[in-house]
Image (cartoon, rainbow, N blue to C red; front, side, top):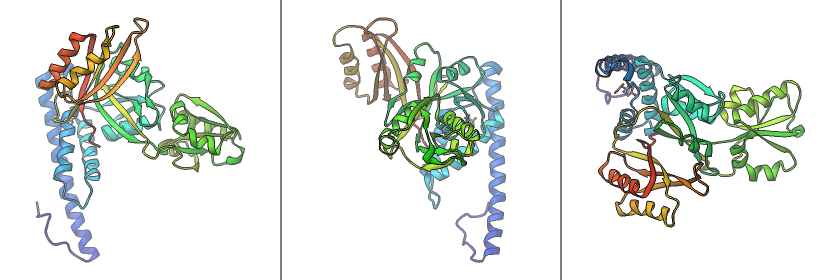
Length: 373
Ligand SMILES: O=C(O)C(=O)C[C@]1(C(=O)O)C=C[C@@H](O)C=C1
């Protein structure tokens, strides 16, 4: 391969010749990489057998992307470069085995956006109507992995997702964060002044509450199953001349051919949602991981204090604590705890053992690479 640092020509035809030649080299190299991935698939099949074989390796993907960012010298930015490699790996994985990814649908949701960000575009999309359907689709093996929202920086936790882990055998094998921008949308034939109802998911309505109170105080807000569904309903209503607006994101706006009345109406400009990837396997260490636990506490004084004390004592950094009512006993609680590290790290194992002696149940929901993109 020619030296990439050689002098750059300065006429348009020469520059384009140069780009053509570089493209051809990049293309050969991408195909060489793809052939390696095909070989990896053969080795995995030989080693693990048809049934148990795991093609998708989140820890390896995170390491590849981190390395891309570390060695990047520009002028392309680190994230931009990582996105290119994200898609190359997505194509390589699809050659090994196309992945069917269930997500909270319909088409156009932020969860779909998150799925594409995490897995790249070479996946088979399986939109589901509800969070527990995503879990069921993966549990049954109909989908390889699922993507569900778990918390939002403005509105807090998504209870349906946390509650789904109670009775599920699925593991968390990844996380992804998305900046969420909401827009007020109508069908192109509708005059915004005529709008009688605003549809959106209850979380999106909440994330735009102050803006709605200020600019649309007298219009009825209607919570529907997702903001993409709201966009679909607004588009449908528009066809019969009904003035219904939706609050949804860019993907849904484009998908349903709506017009923006107002853009970026979320109350907090740093509004971010975190999503989880769920699958069947525990993920090996990537070098920079997080762990999520589900803990049923004993119903006794100081129960939570004793749990938290274990983290402090062993120097493990707890990043999140959520409480949900236990369905087993009145006034019993389930705690969801995230911490920095992998359940196979020595310090984490010590903490988990300590928790097991202090709680009635400790379930490791998963250890997974900290989001790279
Ligand atoms: O290293 C592997 O196990 C591969 O399958 C290769 C590869 C890649 O393209 O780099 C593809 C898919 C996996 O999810 C991780 C990495």
